[in-house]
Image (cartoon, rainbow, N blue to C red; front, side, top):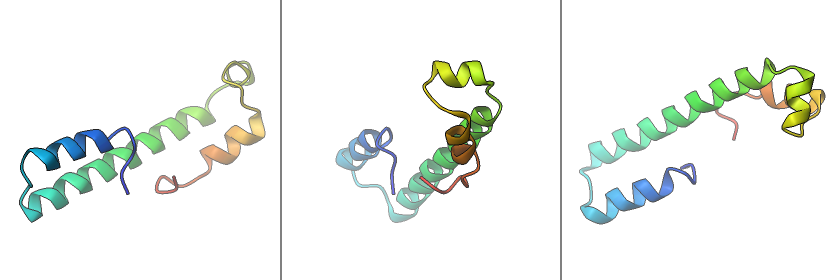
Length: 75
């Protein structure tokens, strides 16, 4: 499973010259770990926003809370 933002980069790398199997696995693992880390960071930040900032981004407190409680591997 790849993030849409990372898909063009991976497609570019694959098109240039196919990577050796271990390199391809390592690259895809790094992409997944980076995506999980980003989700964890942004959900933690979302949980810390006050009501005023949540209104600015168009979210209600209960929706932000529900999103912030999701696990990092959940898309």
